[in-house]
Amino acid sequence: MGKRPTIRDVAQKAGLSLSTVSLVINDSGYVSPETREKVLQAIDELGYHPSRAARGLASKTSGNIGFILSEDHFSLAEPFYTKIFLGTEFEARNHNYYILLTTVGSRFREPDNVPRFLLERNVDGVIIAGRVNEKLIAYIDRLGLPILLVDYAVPKKHYSSIQMDNRKGAHLAVEHLISLGHREIGFLGGDISHPSIAERYQAYKECMTDHNLTLDSRLIVTEESGTAVENGSNALRTILNRGVRPSAVFAANDAMAIGCIQEAKVHGWKIPDDISVVGFDDIDTSAHIEPPLTTIKVFKEEMGAAAVRTLVQAVKAETRSVMTVHMPVELVVRKSTTRYSGNAAATTRASVG
Image (tube, rainbow, N blue to C red):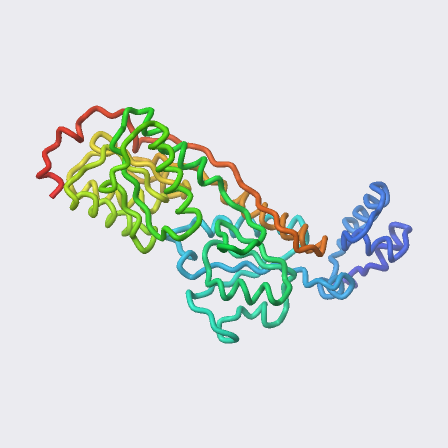
């Protein structure tokens, strides 16, 4: 095996100084496009791979970004945040960064629950996806590391974040049901203190009010502790136990929508003839259940990519300025919704007992 090429070899082949080649490799200063191209061509021809340790010493950075996710969210059953992580992984390559993933529990105590890469100060910044213990966020803040929140916000605190347009998505979902003639539209929610869920619930109420539709509290469930499939089943059951029946429901996320569909089938209902269901997130499972779920598509991988771009910008600028990015969403109409025909209202109340 031949000798591994060094930065000196690159400089010699390109006919440039070591300092100029270093600027290109570390992307740490202005170099003309022509000079940059010379360096990149020499790197390619030599098969040179810069030492991350050497780069770290030169730039005083680790070349790593921490990615923190709660254990509850890191699962095959709810792959929403896993998709966001994949987006960060692919985008990080464009910036010569590695993503270090760790999961954390709901409790936080120093130093037992501090991720290793924080104890070792082995990251240049941290991306936190979803809800984690706010004491952990405060701990990272005290370290002076840039923090980027994805799909979460800390009340009365200001951190840069990547958010989906929850309000727009909820309006699209409810207006879709209204356009199909539905008037008794339920809302199934849980973990209502989560900012995204709270925004979807608020937008649901606004949309109903804007269309002069009655907000029937009996058709609204927000007290579920989580937003998993079983919470969706429980939520629909709660509504039925109140002696009412919606012709359609908007669920806070796809998992709850899937649970709602499962519960409806237990009662012998046909979806969407007897009840229309709309979710939020567009997880992979949504397109493959029976019937395929109408939902709000969230561009999860792009959220992860935007998180990396925003955090890298903060690291390079060495600034703590706060930036909030709202990512677009869109309505995906599948087969779980249909025009209201009155079938649900005609069904006897005994069938919901």
